[in-house]
Length: 284
Image 1 (cartoon, rainbow, N blue to C red):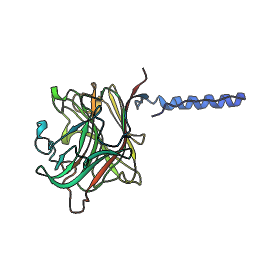
Image 2: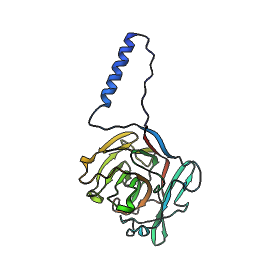
Image 3: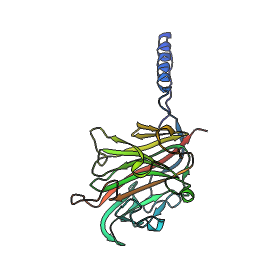
């Protein structure tokens, strides 16, 4: 998000008065008390995926397997069907993009493979703007996500750590995404969420920017800088746990409670393309 600025050279009193009126109008719009807006313009993390090969190990980790190594039931706690790998067939940087690809293949007892990466222990931040420019895959049972988890998850477990789903999407509904928060007393099927429908377009046919702006006691959800939801402590039926550092996750799941299984019309492979991931904080 860019910080607006004004530059003008006044050549007459009339021009000066018109410009002052414009400034007053803009200020009046920006002080609407129904909406919290903060300018986050200090870049703290950026990955443009401009070096072909594996992901940058200084910023990202691979989550591997079917979830059991993380202490979850097989299927990552969501009845997902894929096995996550670090193979270039499933994840690579190429042509200025991160490619996360779901494949239909028998692997380690699973019927599908894909990839999931995190910045846990490497890139973690409290508050700011988190955004990614992405083109999504499509098809019944395809479940891409760009999300955040509380960095204290190993100490307090989920959902006490908090979860912010910046973008979740059902491949069978390629014009609709969901932004969600999970916390104690409002997780899983009781999470607090809102859908956004892309006007006259689909998320699998071009790139879009998915983001949040997050500060003390609010989280704003954006698509292409369109604000479609704001959540505050009054909007959740439990404890507000979004006051600590969170880390980033990107993944492409197959099947699961949110989307259901693939069907005969689901084409494979399916690839999620990520042009960049950026994190900002407010000016200090």
